[in-house]
Length: 610
Image 1 (cartoon, rainbow, N blue to C red):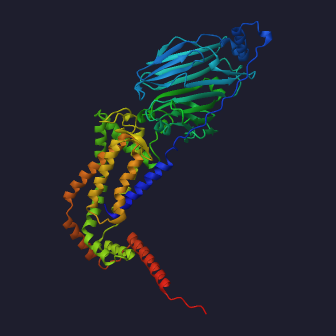
Image 2: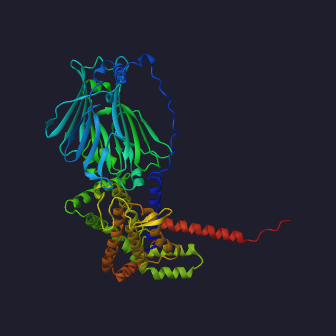
């Protein structure tokens, strides 16, 4: 590892630390528990004391609902729609979704994965009547129509009768082999009863803990939304204070996104505006976060038969989400800018291709490493060639250092002159490493968000999507944690071995050489709690790079390199340096002149005061 490569590694490590500092959510902190508010006792009305409580309550409900009071009574009955992927239970009271089970997935402790239930989640729709009453669908009883099948899709229709040819209808359609549930809200014959005011859709979702690592799940759980103007935004919230977003422009969809699963609603047209809230309590280990959504639906859409929506309950699988409308795949955080492009155009296609032929994800990761390494072979070769040139020039460089042992600037000037004469670009070893940064950061986003690796085991790791626990520590090490990730240890050891091998070929000495060994240790602390798949990838990558350089070494002849450099020396004997090298030499010369001038000024005899 030469000086330029060391500079490249320093820049990569600095960018890694900056990336993790500014693009990772803040660690959860404890949220103060709300104080209990005393409830005043309710004194029954003496005049109504002789009326049965149930009858009085029913009469009050009917009065509150006005014309819609005819739907205030009924029986709560459950109906189930299911395919090979989902089992959805509906409740006739409100005609709303009661529970959603993902059939092909389990929680971290191998229990059924219930993404939505009546305890942790609830949706509702309310509207205003012409006489200014507020009606909630959750207060109405709907009659389930006979289940029917249309184009291999199950259809469930609920109706709440208001009067002759006047009813509210909710229709749910579950296609075969789909995580998407179509939802249609119809107000038939109600134009004279419903006010021309927006309907209000509310969704309160207390995300259930379905992954082992609660902190990682919280960091990657966000309330995402997409506007009609294609602006994608999210809120995350913290334990210190909830995060609230007021969106005044039309909204296309909102998504309660966890690490690997999402529950969302998508409008065929749009929601006119909305208010979103995200919060959580750091002391509550049973929940991930709580999302509260309040959206407005134009009344004219529902009254004119255009109240069409879709619910999505399913995995954050890129191929599945990409097939949904309005850039729904943006729910998966694949990185910013060029990093997302690397993931979508290179990493994900290769990964999905390998999945078609292999079921062992350890093998898939190894083959992914080999493919990327082949792709980067030109850069690796160029980097190694730069190291070989530095190795050949080592005697001249050592001679310059011995000639100017106490004058670093003079030594650097003559070294740069040597580079120029020999036709060596001092940045050629740094640039190839910097060009690999997009792949480095792309993988930092790919592995923690890859649901394909969820609960996939490899050796001692039981889940490649989160950190592996080879051993638990009886104490917590700051910035490291209370566990030992063996894949991270192997990655660190292989990096040190690779660094040692490179240092045998270079002239690097002093602090730079020390830092080249210190940097892998620093990175170990950063990635100890990262996905095991990522650590395994870089462990294999180091081994493959080590072998790759051993092969390249067999095709690089130091004698031929020396002969080429001597030819350059003769050719460039009277040639003045240009471009970057000239600017660098000029800057170093100017710095040397300033230092000499300051030294002379300091040594000049001071005039005696009279």
